Length: 385
Image 1 (cartoon, rainbow, N blue to C red):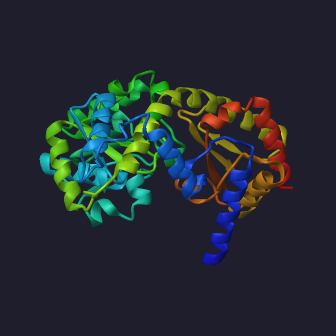
Image 2 (image 1 turned 180 degrees about the vertical axis):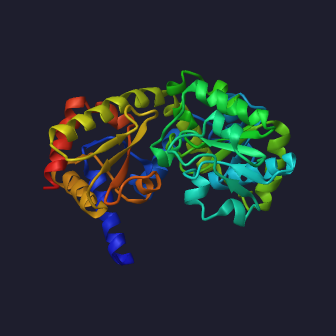
């Protein structure tokens, strides 16, 4: 597909999603620039004094967001970063200097390994080792038995490319304790940590307290414009601010992103437990719908979901599933699935010829009953025939 064809396909997708009267999740990226600016301006006054001066290299609303995040996670401090990739590189680099060991233990499906072009080694001089290749978080025994030392254990909660999967609370606590036995520090890749409380039955502070540092994203679960925060001890955060500048992350003004993050914390964070609960209803109904439609093979992973997101695997080419998804949205006004691909499922060990999509359930998805989902699945499968 040429670049022009891809651009046309993108316009088609956005038109179909925007025109749908029923979707499982409405995203800020589905809108126009004007709509986004108008929405931000309308809501900004509810989270911050509009007469306050704009931030300049931090301060103002950015500092307020940092204080808010530190309070939510129960850490001494937090620093705003323009990207999560930068936040995690800085955190892991700082810990390498403090532990004297530049080796990071993480899962081969973790974000830095799959989606960052080898950044930890190429930019930060770090080395990575893998404790398990199973599509789940490493267990305590795998941490204890690894044959070489590592300075930091990085745990991605949830592990997105394995299906947004989480361990049990006891498993997580035991894995962290095993790392402590090896004198390793623990860093949480908590891009979607906001969604994890219902599964663990714990609040954010108790989850964050297990680790030495935590990264959180503001756009993945909270639908902010962009940005992330690194939270932890004040001495670590102060050092991270120095490295943030060195990495080019000391941005002149960031108030739009900071405002959108505060709006997300006010609006979306309290609703996430309801999204997680309804994702279980949606996933179960999808599995029932595929079985009733006679699909020869499918997977909903995990079932039930651990967060508001989960994967669906089907034995068709991605372009066939993309076209069926678009036709359903265009012809019926129902967007059940968005983009399909082969990469994530393949990385998690799926057989050849299987494609995967990620399903997110947010506010708009709460309107769907289980029967609505089953009917939509039947319509989707009909378009594959």
